[in-house]
Image (tube, rainbow, N blue to C red; front, top):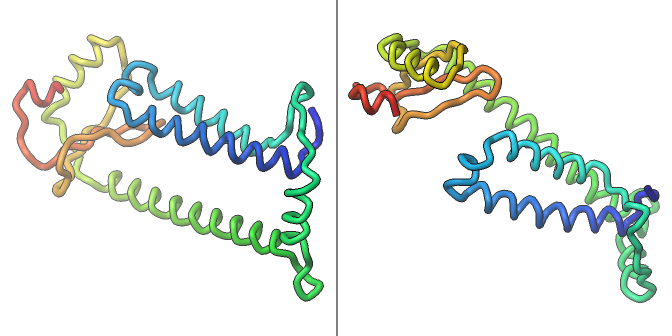
Length: 178
């Protein structure tokens, strides 16, 4: 692999952005997750993240040198303002700060949601239906079922420790099975 350069980094950003947009469009299709599973989606997302973190060109790739467009552009963004920092430094610091702020916000929101779900009411009224389905699909994991008062429709949360969240309403046996 060759060393990272401005060309390889910008190429990596552009290609990964298009691939991520394509993956998001695919994931919005109704049958994508059902057909390929969440493992495939997570593997593709992990590949895109790793590609973004490792902006190297492969040995078989060739860079096209630009002697008219890129040098003046990089002269502008690398020009030291007040002799201290460049526009590129400002851009990178802003990007890293925004990333860290969003990461902290996501972590706090996830923790609050986890605490809310953990503190919600456990219900056992659908355990027999769940056990029947688990036996049918040869699964032996105990999945807690929780009732959430203001929830509009049933959902599942948790990747490693899933919980089934149900609205605070009564379901018929067929609805509960679904």
